[in-house]
Every structure is written in structure tokens, then in C-alpha cells.
Image (spheres, rainbow, N blue to C red):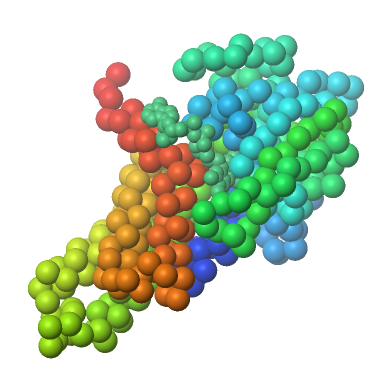
Length: 322
Ligand SMILES: Cc1cc2nc3c(=O)[nH]c(=O)nc-3n(C[C@H](O)[C@H](O)[C@H](O)COP(=O)(O)OP(=O)(O)OC[C@H]3O[C@@H](n4cnc5c(N)ncnc54)[C@H](O)[C@@H]3O)c2cc1C
């Protein structure tokens, strides 16, 4: 139900849907790995909408390779001292809390190029308040789309955080981060389907109005087939996220299906929105019509919460027999 609502919001305004999806992603660690006491304290504000969250995993040198993150949380009396930089934070500078992943192991001094595996257990998850002393933000990135939500860097300079703000066990951070992303990827898949549906609707409306060579352009089979392929891509993409969501609801493993849904839905959104611009012809390329915005919005869905190359890695790993 949540994903279907998200799809509807995305069809109207993708930035708002992404904001909702990223907020949910930020809440997931506390909901799934937090203690009862932590949930009692922080969850009501998150669920009521009073507080908006941000998810802080990526760093300038660690995007796809999240395990290479260097932001360090050094243990001190009663808590941790956090130092380091984070990148690409949706809601950066605006959020009420930041779900942060930082390194608590290896003497907080990881090698420059970690390689696969080995140091995954050194990372922990923290819930950082937005007004945390020692936390500051860069200026918002100038993005291709999603102008309504800021994306910034964050800088931790001797930020002292109480031990009670650690979510899950020390060293469990990467497991928590990936668990949240499995869920978040379904959100991005639903957002992508919403964008694609909106592009399909606009393209169909135009193709039923516009005439060329004495008939509606939809009645030219060459263009009707483009629209048919767009409709099929949207329906197929929707089915993949619903399939993964049903598995999640049933308590079955769904990590691989979430990656399939993210891959299929976001690639479909990119293709469908590009074709929508084509259906509108010259006006499709202008800002007078919405389809160019859909195309710019679709592009980011192939990149964040794991690029589609990373989704293929996850899917391939699931196909590998031990
Ligand atoms: C608008 C926006 C919002 C974002 N919001 C957030 C957020 O809220 N929180 C957060 O933590 N992060 C966020 N991100 C970061 C995002 O998740 C990363 O940009 C993404 O994971 C890719 O990392 P990267 O940019 O460092 O690219 P890189 O990891 O440098 O990848 C560059 C290219 O190499 C490819 N590549 C890398 N490794 C492999 C491999 N093993 N096999 C094949 N290809 C590979 C990638 O697919 C990509 O095409 C956001 C990014 C953007 C642009």
C-alpha cells in the first residue's frame, strides 16, 4: 500500500516522493534494529511527520563501494567522537535527524583501498540529531533534477555523540545499511514507475490530440507501437516491485527481488520518459511540457540507492551457487 501511494505521489511530483522514500529509508534502522527504549523515544516523531530524516552512508570516495567509508566514530567515555565527511545527503542541512554510518573498528584508520570484504564488521550505525554540535553542511549540489530537495555534503568535526544513539550492535552497521537499502530500493522502484506512468499518460494525451498526415499521430502504427511498448514497460515494472513487496510482507527474503525491481523499474522509467519526449516531437524538448522534467527525474533513479550496475552485482551474487 505504501509503495502504491508513493507511486501516485511520484506521478505528480517525484521530488516529494523521493523525500518520503528517503525519510522511510532513514527510519528503517531504528524500526528494525533499535531497542524498545530507543523506539519509544524517537520513533513517534519520525512516524508522525514532525521530523524528517536523512540517510548518511555515501562519502566522496565511497559510493558504490560503501564498505570503503572512512568517517570515524572513536569510542570515548560514554559515547563516540565522530570525525569525517559524508557526501550526497538528501535533506542535508534540513533534516531533523541523520542516520549515519561510521567506522568504529580498525583503529579508525582504514587502508585507502579496502577491497571486497574483510572490514565490513567495522562499521556502526548512529542516529544523529540535526542540531548536533560539530556537524556542518556544504552548499546544495546543483542537480539535473529534483530541485525541490537539497543534496549536500556533511562534515563531522569532533562531534560527540552519546552511546545511546548507536543503533544495533557495534560493527553491525553495514548489515543495517544494506537491510535499509533493500527496503529503500522498493521505494525508488515505485517512484520510477510513477514517473514512467506520468510520462505515458502525457504522451498518450498528446498523441490522441496531435494530427499529422491527416490523422491522429497515435493512429500511425509506428507511433502507436512506441506507446504500446511504453505501456508494457510500465506494467511490467509495476509487477516487479509488487512481487518483491509481497515477498517482504510475507516475511520471505526479498533482497534479490528488490534489486530486480529497482533495475527493471528505473531502466523502464528512463526508456519510457525518453520515448515520451519523442512522442511530443519538438515541444517535448521544451519546458512548456512536463515530459522533459520526467526524463531528468528518471535519470537519478538509475543512480542512487545503488547504481543499476550494483543491482546487477546483487542479482548475480544471488545466482551464484556456493
Ligand atoms: C541526487 C542524489 C541523491 C543521493 N542521496 C543520497 C543519500 O541520501 N544518502 C546517501 O548515502 N547517498 C546518496 N546518494 C549517493 C548515491 O547513492 C551514489 O552516488 C551512488 O551509490 C553511486 O556512487 P558514486 O556516485 O560514488 O559512483 P561510483 O561508485 O564512483 O560509480 C561510478 C560508476 O562506476 C560504476 N561502478 C562502480 N563499481 C562498479 C562495479 N563493481 N561494477 C560495475 N560498475 C561499477 C557505477 O555503477 C557508476 O556507473 C545520492 C546521489 C545523488 C546523485
